[in-house]
Length: 424
Image (cartoon, rainbow, N blue to C red):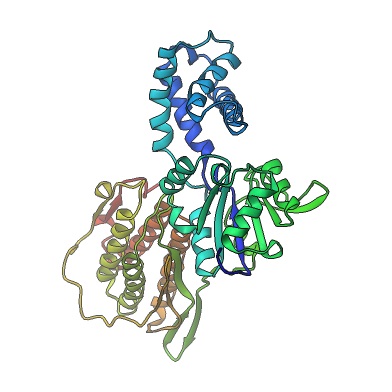
């Protein structure tokens, strides 16, 4: 047994940390595209019916009415039956699974905000565990596939515990494994019956995860339960502060003092971004150099730094093909030097990194102040988009900054920054 801890959080897996619905829709769409008999049916209807068939077959497995292997064919039989189609042959089932399974697995991903939230929880000293109905091997593989296995302390399945949610004994087993206390333990899940009822019966603090909900609370089983629609909201529920940067400007004796520009980002792979600590260090350094270059009217140098930033983000972005980004401007590639790198503060953690300029003092002429102000706001905006996992939007902010530099340098007509929808 682990030593007693004051902070423990249990999560459901399917449809809470794992975006089952996304994988399901991708897989069912692939089946529909390869099965003429399903062509005339709305994709959403197929998704809903297969999800019901899946849940029914899985419940039969959990109730020990069939083996896990038998659920594979049962899902397809129930699906065909719900659609009014003839019962599938063994060959039909084999063909269906041959299409469905690889597509489902290839499209597994975490729900929005889950990776960041788990990383921040670990960095703030929380113990975390997954409590899920199912097989150890299957659910562990799923957690690894979506990049969260190493971010939780334990994965506890109904197969291991011998009980399924909402039975309080699986929650009690989980608490024993982590050395958790009911009055300092949370349970987050999407199922009111399995997750919330079970947690409340075990005297845990329950939080309902409901992406479509607009409510902050909901009355369930006679108790007021908190509701979150995005996993990132859990951090504020727990009082864990996340960094927000708001650049401030002060002009003193011909010097512009810029405060509060930076980035605090999780370095675990997410939906669109997988930034390393080295990449964040590079972006932080280049942001400062861009502003120094502007203050000395070295606009082409500023453009070169911005190009480096764009390409670094593109390389770290899953949906963007870095080779398709076209950047061209006069004197591109010339050596950049002679600028003093401003001092930044970088704090590296196990799963995240923060890079910021607490105070950046620049010698500026009056006509440069508005340009510096505008570019600083764009640089911070690019950081904000990266923290939200929106790399393409981040690159668009840098593109806008480059075009401002091109105009100041008088090379706007000879500058091209396009490709991968960054110019839209």
